[in-house]
Image (cartoon, rainbow, N blue to C red; front, top):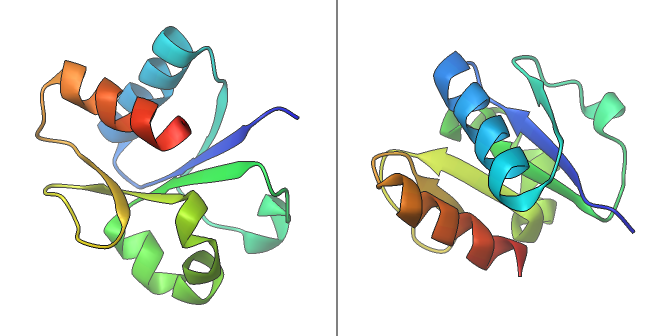
Length: 102
């Protein structure tokens, strides 16, 4: 089963950077979007969601039941949630993603 990755953020730089890291270091293609259409995301149990904090809060009814597959793109670590810290060095972000993918 292949992993399906969705990157949902309005920040173009984060979207492009995360897409690059996933492809370059993990050989994982990803789908990016600035608009969340829950119906289009489907119920694939292998889906991972990289989301902005705003997106997570706005659609918490969708993401909370999938919190073990939802990674919040944040400016600092978030307790009790999967998250990546955008202010970390590139190597640390890669390690954070690697840990999440294991």
